[in-house]
Structures are given as C-alpha cells and as structure tokens.
Length: 299
Image (cartoon, rainbow, N blue to C red):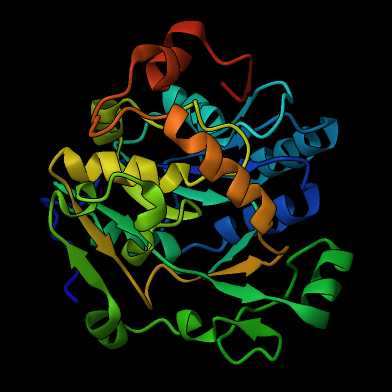
C-alpha cells in the first residue's frame, strides 16, 4: 500500500458529516475531527432537520476549529438523506470529499489515510468497527470524548477486525473493482459484495457533479450510497474498497428493520431508471444548487 504522490493529493478537502437530532454523538464525532493528524479544509454538517440543540453543538465546535465549519440544514420532512447530502455538496469548496455520519469516532489518521488513497479516476469506501455495550453507554452518558482513546483492544467492540490500522493488512484485505464492475447488476440490492457504505466514503467533487450527486427519489431507508457508487462505476471510475485504513468506530445504534427493507424493495422499481449515469436535474445535486439550501450557518 503506497502513499499518495504530490501529483495525486487533493489540494483541498471537504469533510461532510450527516446528522439528525443526535447532538451528543455529533459532539463526539466533531471532537475526533480535532484530533486528526491531517485537518480538513472545511467541515460541512449536513443536517436533516435537527432541533436547535444541534446548532448549539456546531456553533461550539466552530469556535474551536481552525478551519471553516458550515452547517447546512433542511426542514424535517422524513428521512431525506440523499437530499441532505446534495445540500452539502452544493456548497462544498473542497476538491475532494470525505463523507461520514455524525455518530463515529475517527481514528486520528482517518483523513490522512483517505487523502493517501485519493487517485484520479477512483472513489473509496471504507469499513467501520462498532462500539457497543457498557463502553458505549458510558461514553454517551458523559457526552464528551475527553480522554477516551479508541482501540482495537476495547472490550465492547464488534467487527473488531476493521479497527486494526495496518498498511500490511490493508494490502491483503482491500480490493479494487475495475470501472463498470458495479454496473452489471440492475438492482442495488445485488451489490453487497462491493462493500460500499456511505458513512465512510470519499470521492472527487467533480466526479459527484458528473453524475449529479445522490438520487433524491430515495426517501426513508434505502441503499442510496450503493446507487451513487453504481453510477460512479458506470461513469468509468474504479472502486477501492479499503480495509484496515481509514479506521473509525461507530457509536452503534442498530440497523434498519427487515420490514423497512422489504417495503423499500417493493418501491424500488419505481424510483430508478435502468443504466443511468447522470441524474435528472430535478432530483440530483443541481436541484440544491439551483434552489439553494434552506438554511446555512458559518459562511
């Protein structure tokens, strides 16, 4: 696993953090951003309709940060994750985007690793370990990261293998998928082997613009991250599915129910056009650029 050359390294980075009414996990995530060995050029908190308490968390973080911190908010009208992400992309200034959820503790080399892996013609998806049990409960009760140090040796940890940061292990367990590899399956529900998760995802902003961002027809639970990756793959980009670098710890809250998944499967054929690469303007990131984001703080 080789480090990035100066010719490939992004000149600027936008760290997009999605959230909805989880002020304590978000505060912990933002504190882990301050520990990074490589700072982002900007942080954008993409907010799907949180209450004012989340604004207070972001404002407090902005006072501590040495880089711009934007807060892009939209009214609460159900789970609109794709639209939320497109709002952030519409105001992003970084050449490269690293996208996470607001319930992670980032290992201190998280951003450094992502920038080392950035290459033209590539997008990157990583993994995550899950923090659970009494350790998680105590951390959330305290509400601050303080002196807590994430470690693969923590007792209350699932998916522990993804918590080990190692270039040697990454060289063995990471996988490259050639351009177009994700395009063969019509349904994103057949793409699980590609290991794409939107909570640890990185791509060039110009590539997101090329495919017009995330599909806003996805409302509620759905594999909008895999569908976005599928269109990047169709556009001729390589997927680098990295393991054992870009390490983070998920403040685990469980997953969507099977009922929600089955309901979405029934709706899925109505939401997408087969084999598309670039979304129509009315439900892609150009929608956010033309309409504007309802509320932005930090400019």
